[in-house]
Length: 231
Image (tube, rainbow, N blue to C red; front, side):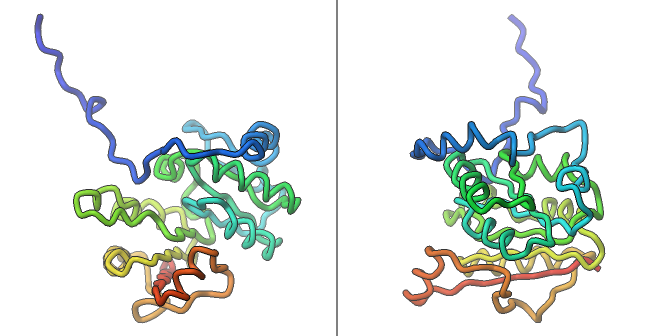
């Protein structure tokens, strides 16, 4: 039997996440079933999101990549009703909880996409359409052999930058110093972005602190916020 030729489809894609069989509560399951039609935007590759249609207004739109359990995302949307927000997450428990919190707060300015963020930004947004992008505490993949899984890289930043409106911003926060230095260096290499500070900046008031972050701060752990704007 002749050997089958290897194609690009055979190459395993390196992803920035691993879907673990984490515990999902009945409430989260119910939310994913009952609230999907109200708050979820299905992933698709053949058409772009029209935020005017999705939200029914022309308000500025912000995207959060990897929102975890959704607390910060819902809090930001609740405190900024004149802005639209789209949260992207792959883990079912987090999506379920975010849907539940969104419905409890009766938010009309927050939608959720349950899919790989890299593919979402590649296919679902038009260039120069977003006012801001948030990436709060991305997985640092601390082991050196796993650094290739880190979501922040030059190509991903290039794509995100193309989606930002002029003067739109990219805000990354991390509690891993080595990763913070790497993120800062990566963003500095993009000629279409300008740092809002000399290096790292103070936490802006719109980013709430999570329980995990507050616990770390009490233990003396640092958090680095990095905000670059599109030139």
